[in-house]
Image (cartoon, rainbow, N blue to C red; front, side, top):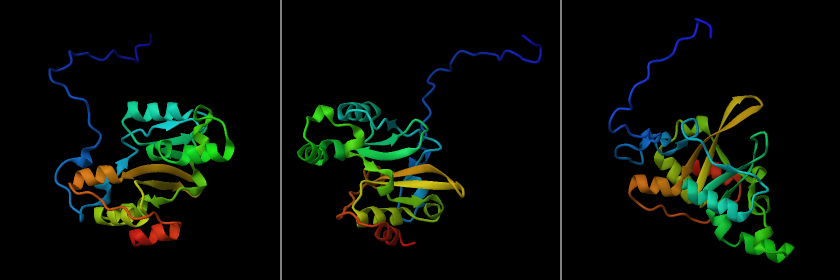
Length: 197
């Protein structure tokens, strides 16, 4: 090998080395006036879990259990988000309604059959979230009646990335108080009004 490369010195792993915890924003007491970013799972720090649209409901459920999450993004081969599926989708009435309409058995249902497609997903703009408080996010979750809110970021006129996720369960845990979720908003306009922007 060329002399331009050098072997690095290796060391014995120090005693009591801990796994890195990416949720640094979870540390310390949390209040409604704190920045919203303190309760957002930042996907620049945490890799989101995804699944194929052709996967079975059992595969989706198992992946959620193993990963310890209640939401999976449904993606195509190129990484583009096709939709999302939640534990509520899997365990609620969606599979029953699908079978009533299409027939078959639960084993034949694919993720794409009951997921919420991307064109129906309502999301928050990261630049607005940067200026929002925890209270703003709580109010948004309560008024739209959702367990999760997703956040996108614009990198150019035609380039968008999924930047973050808000979870009512996580926020409730951090605040130390349960959130009261009303029936969900029906339109993005209602969602937008809920956050006050």
